[in-house]
Image (cartoon, rainbow over all chains, first blue to last red; front, top):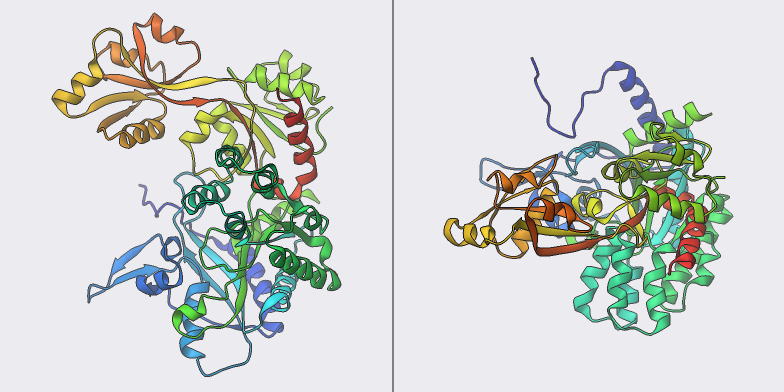
Length: 322
Length: 212
């Protein structure tokens, strides 16, 4: 007899569980030892709360009603719940806050893509430290955590989630075209992007920039290839890179001007974690300076979340390739 | 010789010759692939071969770094997380709505029954086409020769890919609407696009330079 479980979920049995637990533990210990205190929030939130954080409610997969007819949702990430916690439970504290978590979240995924609807996230949020100082701390800590989890070949992509949007504004591209251009970029459809940009009748330089930006990725030299537009964003990436390089992790960094994250609350730097042994990102994050303000207590913040199961897959793959 | 450090997913079938010709211009030795149509994995050339609709799957999961497949495949599976890097230009086909010649079975069904029945392998493309043109359609998925479906009365029309229209004509069908032109595309795994940027860029640059 078959008793199915919902698509995108799975049972974890002892052999795997031991390894998964060990990796989760190493991540958590790294975060705790760096002064990041673990928090726990409800698995269910009011949908309105998630929607306050992101207009798409951060791609919530499961909704239900409570006994008063209110719409509840299974959280789709930990960042919005933690923003709520910071704005309400830590409203009185002024100094920087360092929080970490290890918790399940739920997201819609395409059918039969093999991706998980239910996934275990382990991550950090650093609240109250603006600019590259905060970002560098979070990046360095995440890379430490991956090292401690047994990975050796991990890399981190660093970009600016608002860069393309700002370029469109700086180049005075008509607002009605922004959405479809950004949509092409998010879907990684560079052929469609080129086609649509060509349809705008722009000057050569502007056209080449909008078409070429997604391909600008690599070491700090790509910042020289990038144009003077949005100079402050590029200057910020440069100084972030310099801080990371000074910490000895410059060679782990891939500056990526085309990097976009699909959640709407990122305001500046964005990150994505990779390992050559696996074909998908291990996690990601970024700076979200407006998010906590949406819950009434504006503070700069940034964070990164790792998908523990994907870290495990990468660790196993690296091990077998050694 | 293989392009340094890249695994390439090459589609079998109609796109294969075009894909291999293209790889020849990049200096990849495709002789063994051409001479052996049962073998699937060619490690020396860095080539894996598969049906075109599997190419995005292998590339998305990183089993191949880059791949060549038709735009029709990408349109049918838009949720695949892959970069679409280049329109390679070859393998040009039309995605069309076709119906039996002469009579207007689609118009007739639409007018009298309020919906059309369509057989296709491309259920998503067909659904979107009829929805976006304000018509209700009952989409019937078939796997084999789609041309048979309207001849047996299973459906009023079909949505299918056609290069010359010859197969349609031989079965008494004609194109009644053109949906989209499809050509071969170069796609890349998102992580490979970051971690093997130099290799991928070199390949893309060469293909762009060779393009007419």
